[in-house]
Length: 499
Image 1 (cartoon, rainbow, N blue to C red):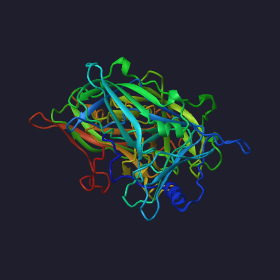
Image 2 (tube, rainbow, N blue to C red):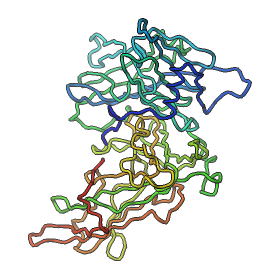
Image 3 (cartoon, rainbow, N blue to C red):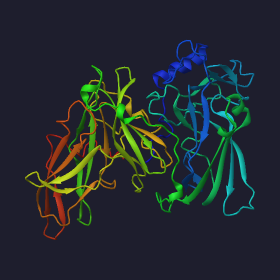
């Protein structure tokens, strides 16, 4: 899937707008935290630590440029990290940046603009195959929180701070923030590197002025990874054993999770998964595969939220479903299986393994063939019904900072908002049935949501859709398919293959 976080698709959430207004007007900034100190306790500043995976593979595009965040994360624990940037309205002085810490405001190094923190990190790149080569050393500005993810499952479910650093030369104030229990990417989606293919030792450090001001421990200011750079034409997704991540994260105790709908607090909104009829059905040119598109959507009054937390040294994440009250606060969770890394060229992201299944049924509704696709990345691609209770009208712009995650990701949140569905188009790996050895006849394409009944939802009786088709062979021996129309729907009108 092409990463959906692209220029022009960023917005202020209502909370973020409130935070910025507080910054500009000088009002106190309040940030809820999963570990807010008890009433009367002395405030303590958060622990801030720079971490990186032991090894990362990145690919060059467009003249040697790398588009990857390289896995470097600024972990914040014990309270939020909030930074205000401001300047005088006469524009005669440089902006100032202040970290709003629990123990008091701390002035950060001098800034050039409202936006990224000027010269926040130091980068050192050493060619492993040419130890005599001069290391590449440079400093880079950073937008804290531009891309962030939960590092602890008990952290706040939403990031209340702006998810990017909007820039205008006449800006007067800006806010950057990382919630307690979250980890912020230092590079964002575009690392800005131009480097030839090879093996490198990449060291990133928080520059001294910032590290001192933020009270970072000496061993928490720097992190190093083994960076392997490949041409875009080389194997994308091929990894050796030493390229596994060493995540630094804590999972919830599965024993403390819920087991059924009845255990949720009364009135808790709940998702409701449903399957649309399969569409875009066609036979491939060789006549060996029946290709199709499918959409599973959420008709409930709550988003379907599934978080994954990576196991040490594995390409597997433990998955948890989270439940939110009407105000969006987390009230419960349950363990719901796993997520796995899918290295296939049309995927290259993390898939939840128990979301849906596809089957081709015989005329008597018995199974003829099962699709090899058994895992999915949850994302809002299509607005299916925005009139349902709790529908999220702006969901196409929600949670794009994490979505399906890259290989370097330590934790990921995948969300299917109320009223929205997730389309997988027929060109995706796994969106087909092998029909070479099937006889001509009537069949049904079955799409089943929540096949193992591991996800808690309000209704499981509406999870299935069946699309009747006819497979036949013409006089020249070519396999074909006829797909009867569903009601008055003309699939040729308004079909957009989103991913």
